[in-house]
Image 1 (cartoon, rainbow, N blue to C red):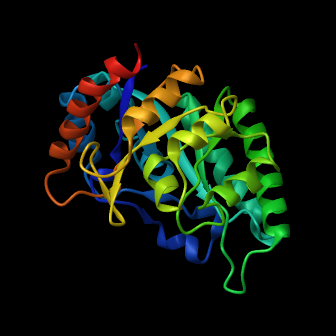
Image 2 (image 1 turned 30 degrees about the horizontal axis):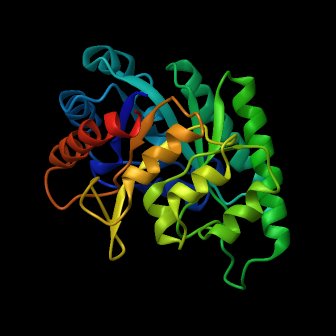
Length: 272
């Protein structure tokens, strides 16, 4: 398995304001300096990086290829997302997903990582899960057209937080599964158990720790990573492990180093 890091720690995630009025233009974006981020990720010893669709688009014709060459990092995945449950805007959301897939293919990424599934003010219905599942099948098809693997990332604030909701969506779609250890734990699930529950669906893995509702570098919270890593080994997953820490109260480069040291210490034991 190879280790990567998400650039999100360098400023958290924001959205493009133009998406308020033009859904096709809404992207995720980290406001921090991506040159600084990728250089720090490489210096910490990671081999790959995952980036948001907005940052990849921003740098696509402004030096991303050169930055990846300089740092020696592989672009592992591009992360995008959408509401997916509103038929009137779905075509524009899928336009955006297709654009993210084109960028991922251009820069040699393996994964199209997708989050989303809006939670309505009036409450979630079974139809919402049906529509999400159908849309994710379309996303999976878009990824395949571009030589990518697609995976769905359950996330707080969407209609797929807890284990029951994870079950509902994966019963309705063929898309792969990107477990995020902290989001699954915060949603009331056991990350290792959910990895074991879907052994044939694991396409990508996001690692972060959690304590008292706060996301933390690996080893600083309550997630049982020995069990998580054992589960990853048991299901036969042997691709990228991607640390994805949303924010850090300090130098984000320090957070990357903390998690890398934790994995260096724990991963060999988990793989034996």
